[in-house]
Image (cartoon, rainbow, N blue to C red; front, side, top):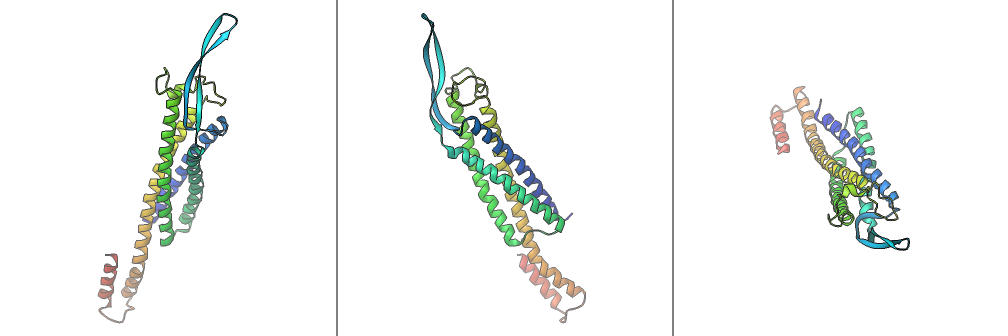
Length: 243
């Protein structure tokens, strides 16, 4: 199996994994946004309040509930969702292109390989920023829910505790934690895309340089040269082209 074919197979597998990981980012975030009525839980600020409620004429009970002072910025959730959606679409398109190239037995041009590498590096930094944002936002929300870890339950357990908010909180941790792990996987896959794109660019560059030399050497072997010393001269030129 040739080197370019192995690279195409590896890139095709990476694109397939990107589609799966991207869906595992988009779907949980969409479910969480629907449960929170379009609000973003990331970086939300709030506190716990205890109030006394009178039951009947003499009996009173204490009632503790969470008060959200300010919901998190929508851009925090939308940023992570954008990276997930772009990863799914890009992975589907590039995966199909890789399969097409495998069938046609050719690869990208040098310029196209360079643009692919540049795009992969840009989205790598974007996905890394989105991963950090989602992680820090979830930590901030967990601190609010657990009252900075002073409650008797963890953040994962708090989704089964009634918070008495006007949103559905029964699965917020499972959804946000799944999106967080998947987004870090997306970042790792974009790193793999960048490495594979660089290798394909290097291979295309090597093929473009060595192509004329191999063609000329073939002519020399077939005896189509006119000057006796042209073979060594052109061979020296080819060697110099790689340096």
